[in-house]
Image 1 (tube, helix red, strand yellow):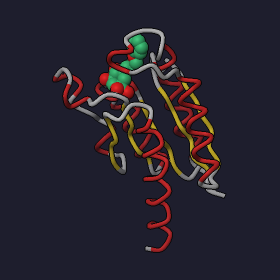
Image 2: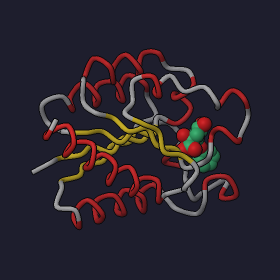
Image 3: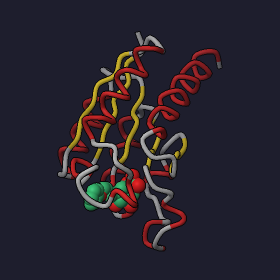
Image 4: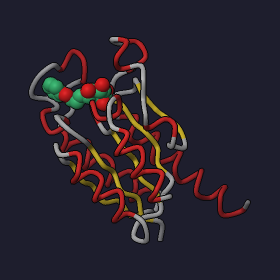
Length: 149
Ligand code: CA2
């Protein structure tokens, strides 16, 4: 069975508590349940992880090699700063889709740059929590395509 890992980075544990006008009213546990339930409808396994620490995120990305077929990654603000997380995604060689709740390209210019986009299969942003559902489907399609290639 295909197994996916959904990783959320710093401050995403605060979702639904503050700034609902930017990030919506969904909470992190709500998003994680949405991911698990959607994955189940597609007959794929889904594990979730959140950390506010760069090294812990890197450890999870490394550990995904051999235990998960794909990663859905919202690295939060590390998206715009972390060469270390970019290198972890590249070195793990696990297909990764980058997700953001907000449309980072319509926000401050420092959010327009993503180091992760250089190593991700693709980026989904601006669709709120539904972006995780889109990413699960996109990752399943990508893995199926890679299998037949
Ligand atoms: O839009 C996204 O998903 C982001 O990855 C969210 C990050 C932000 O730094 C990225 O530029 C885009 C922020 C995480 C959530 O931060 C909160 C701050 C206050 C209240 C609730 C969440």
